[in-house]
Length: 342
Image (tube, rainbow, N blue to C red; front, side):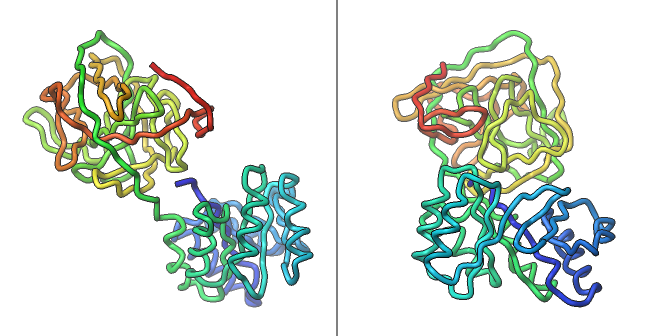
């Protein structure tokens, strides 16, 4: 579920209008890292994006080298590319004749280094293969196209999120608390019934908190909203990292998840911190206890396999959905370390 890097080349075509069309199409499709020619600086006025300049094998952004290209024609080129791992931010690999085994070798060499392995691709099927090789895949794709209409074939690079594996957590305790600060997240998307966000007091268990997509006897539905929980809680971002709810603000990308695990990126329009009555909900899964603290209101709902349940109707013994993971997190990123959060 880690977010992949996608660079779009808009510098290869001879005619300026053709290069402009690629930039326009890329922006409309949601791509924000676009390679342009140095003389095409005026294309920046088409929209806000990272204008990367390609110059004799180097990739430049705002005057700083951010990557280097390696064209592979032999095993020596592959060996040279491997020597760059850990030394620069990005290495872009291109070749006339891709085979899976060389890519596997490069993925192994770059894995667990600070350097991103970006692979050049001229068709979407190859791009998909590069991102899935050895399960982890390359860190990103450099898209080469000559027809702006072809960009739609690469939409999966920014639209698709891997399904989230959800487990049932059996509720063991429900306890009303006093007043505390809770965070309400208003997104820039209309969320469906049974779709919400992953929130929890422990990063090892993030409960699926439903959006306010259902009508209530007392208030109208707010299908763009997730009343997420107390400020200390973790929430899952679109990159697979967690953030504290207290850190969430306009423009952040979070992960919206349905009860069947289907996930998508959504942007935050605003986040509101307000003092509200809270309720502690504890549950058990795989012989481990987990918890989440939510606002104590009937509009707050947790997702179940087939529906949602209000915190006001929740009972000990009920089962709700959550994402369970092993290990711990440091600054929101998964680490291979034993961490106990109570």
